[in-house]
Amino acid sequence: MDVSSSEIAHDHSPFLKIYKDGRIERFIGTEVVSPSLDPQTGVESKDVVISPETGVAVRIYIPKATIQTQKKLPVLVYFHGGGFCVETAFSPQYHRYLNSVVSEASVVAVSVDYRRAPEHPLPVAYDDSWAVLKWVESHADEKGPDEWLKSHADFERVFLAGDSAGANIAHHMGLRVGAEGLHAGVKLEGIVLVHPYFWGKEPVGSETAEAEMRAKIDDLWRFVYPATSGSDDRYINPASDPKLGSLGTGKVLICVAEKDLLKDRGWYYREILGKSGWGGVVKLLESAGEDHVFHLLNPACENAKALLQRIVSLINQGEL
Image (cartoon, rainbow, N blue to C red; front, top):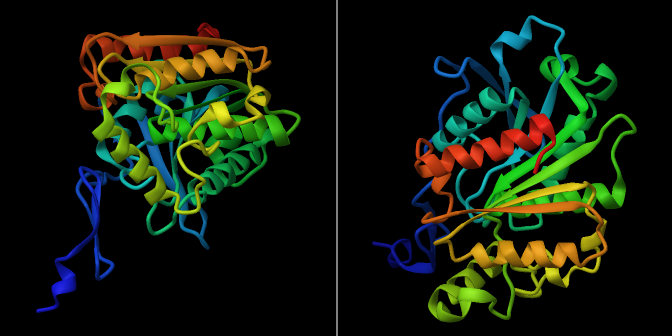
């Protein structure tokens, strides 16, 4: 028996383990569901590979009733969570959640299936996500390969959103929009960061009492981004980014959960963004008594419904 097949090289439970023979064992986020017409919401979805070379794909959602009309809808580009190393755009919980968001907000949603670490360490996920955003943008002026986006996307009402690692990605896509701009007919109206995965070398708030968990988060970050400078890298700590004030939108909604260790990073992000010279409007919603990504695990609870309605209000009424 090859001993290396059972010897652990890296243990990042509850996400995954890496064995010395190179085998990767993921504990969550491995189940996938197919695109479909969801009978409960009336939302239809389909999968599109945008880069055959990399395999980067998206799942696009639209209210089915819209397909046979000329109606234009806001565009939501969504980045899933999972510590940059688990989950996909095709996971059941994300498929269910996007169906709900699309139904409630009446949007066209593009859920991004970026490549994950450790097979594809950061910054690959950021590059993949930007490639998807540029692909979405290519449909402005009723051009581009996808009929749903070409016919039904209102590119003057584009929103970015994500949870956990996906919120981190959404933030960096907003920065890149600010730095590089978008097509003349495309406007990034707002960004939603749900339980964002930000961190830092020095603890803030309640993190001071969580030494063991802090160490695990530090280790995970270095695992998914081996070339990082550490926990004060600008990719994980927005406070260390001199370009924070160039965020390419005027509205940001931050959502945190009371029992989530990452909660104080959300509050801190609000503080530093307000002091960065950015000039937009930032609001924060804290869900009492809840933990990390509770809205995905228990979407029927009242706090999950309230969180969803805040996102809908931003998309439909521009209200933070």
